[in-house]
Image (cartoon, rainbow, N blue to C red; front, side):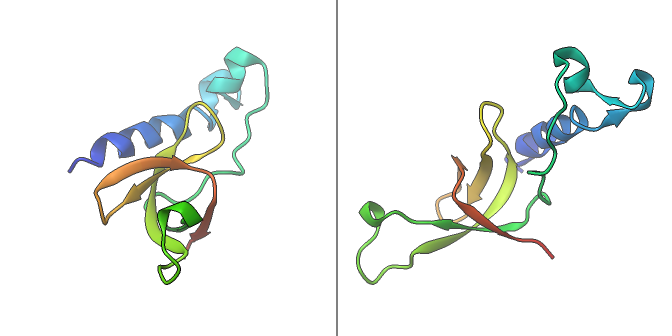
Length: 101
């Protein structure tokens, strides 16, 4: 249930970056800034993501990647909000490979 907040924030983030009929098929965010918004970084919500674990955070025989889930997008820079089920934490990361089916 605690991921509903992230789901609502992701919905608003995507809605602000999709064309709107009332604005003449322009995107809301681009309408106010005058810039064309990029949507190539959009991924499927709750898709499986594999993130690299740095050498400092693991030992020699530990796994080099963690299985995590996409729950949102960062507002400040081009990164993703990722849910880590092992410790029930949400982090912002950029070094991710997605599996979308």
